[in-house]
Image 1 (cartoon, one colour):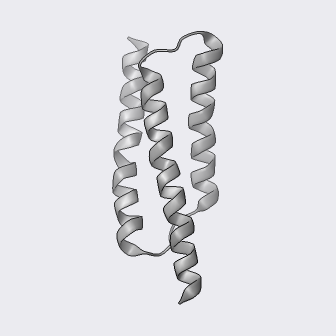
Image 2: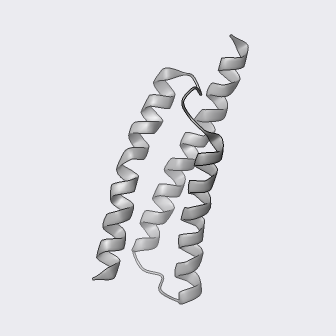
Length: 89
């Protein structure tokens, strides 16, 4: 049952990332975003995956950690693209 709630937490967090990615893509600016914030979130997801591996409790929940990691990493890449675009203007 705890894995269900952990997955639910990750799904709820993960719902916001596609919206953030779309906003980053459309706005073409890094204003209002923080690369450090995104990096700390990435560290958190990696830590969650490592904790699962160390505890020997690798289940389907790891998929949600990995998916969220990919989404946040995509948003971070867009941050740097948009930051470069901001500096060109």
